[in-house]
Length: 71
Image (cartoon, rainbow, N blue to C red; front, side):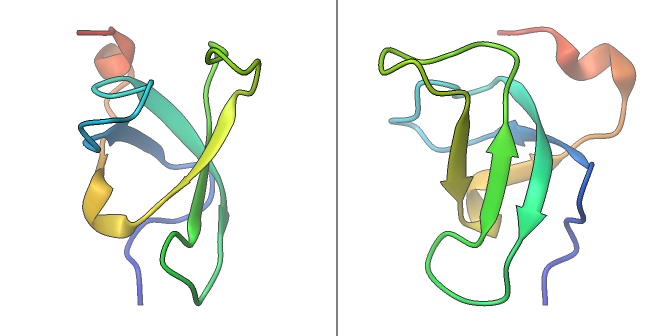
């Protein structure tokens, strides 16, 4: 079971992600599948979306408000 919960702030670790090293908010945690955690961002990607699904090992939980800075 995942330790990441809804409304948690997480930093994206996936190298090929548009939002790599940015902080987003967890909006959904599903039990199954390869990418069970849905994260919403303030910025949109090239396709105009602001959500994406990730695996737990592609996220780093950070509830520090000062961690919202982009790298």
